[in-house]
Length: 135
Image (cartoon, rainbow, N blue to C red; front, top):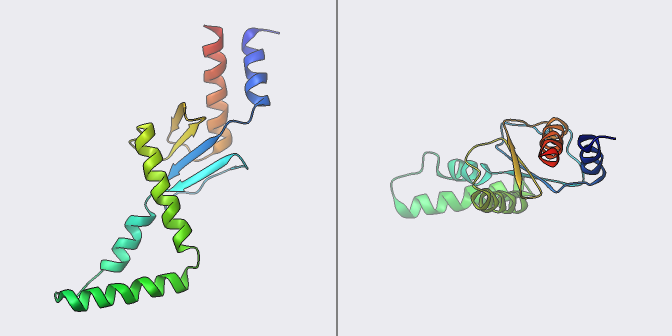
């Protein structure tokens, strides 16, 4: 067996930690148990929904915003977890230096941009690992 084949087999045998950074317009393909998906525009979408066409009067605006937020919570029982996911995703993206999405990060070390297919991104990552092992 060549070094590249060994590196590929080792990479395949290990399940990397995968973090995916997307916005709500994108869908992930072939995610697994080792995948964390961050929908990083969720906070912004909530802000837009809450602040749409608010009245000029600050007290009226505050009351309307609160009513909208409560309605959002009733309609979406997962709202808190979605907002927490977005906040964590923004923090992680900043720590990794992610500057665009979609982005798929492997073990906090390597990033593949532009893909939403986990399997395809994993193959690229494994190929890169095998090439690095050869050098």
